[in-house]
Length: 264
Ligand code: SF4
Image 1 (cartoon, protein in one colour):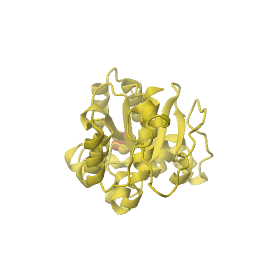
Image 2 (image 1 turned 60 degrees about the horizontal axis):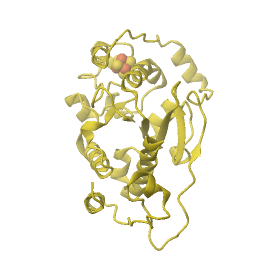
Image 3 (image 1 turned 90 degrees about the horizontal axis):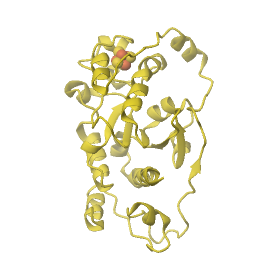
Image 4 (image 1 turned 180 degrees about the vertical axis):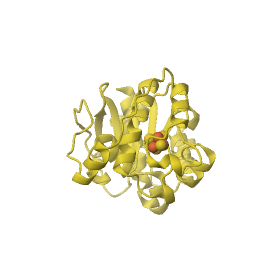
């Protein structure tokens, strides 16, 4: 994608303050070929340093006592699926948590069977529950646009959620529901073998990293996820950006950080 096309897409998204840095001195541009964001005339300081946390496993954080009790009663799903498609069929029949009783259908995920990129959101919403697809509606369109600006057509990345069924009224997922559904996401990651995982939103990031840190403190760092130490980047959920468009540039920065992991 040309810089002109990318700039136009970013402009349509309301991200207008992007300029190319000096290509000779900017390591981001050199590494990725992607225009690095700079807020003009504000500062010439370099972007926040990349902090690499060597975490062979998701960060272990003591859960709240109530959560512990809930999770302890949750039966652990053991999936015998031998392919992503077989896993999808397993998920369709799943009744491991209470959400099976209120869903219209499961929302497994969308994308190719092998994908360098894996985006993990929170849970299906009303539209997703109706259509059986993740990230549809306005939030999904915004994500699609951002991927396009990154030079990644949506069809080439995999998009899923921590939960495969919609919580009633779009409430936050409960700890027992997240624990029950987690094995499905882990198996998805096994099959997809992504080179980078992007956690979209606080719920997803906290669930994946087993932490209660606020999202703002998790951004801007490269975590390592699972036994394969897959780089994991945390950023805002597109639905949050619809309510807080001024933060779109932060997500763009996070996506550029994720993009740089592909080269590594
Ligand atoms: Fe099963 Fe996950 Fe749906 Fe709960 S949310 S019923 S664990 S697929």
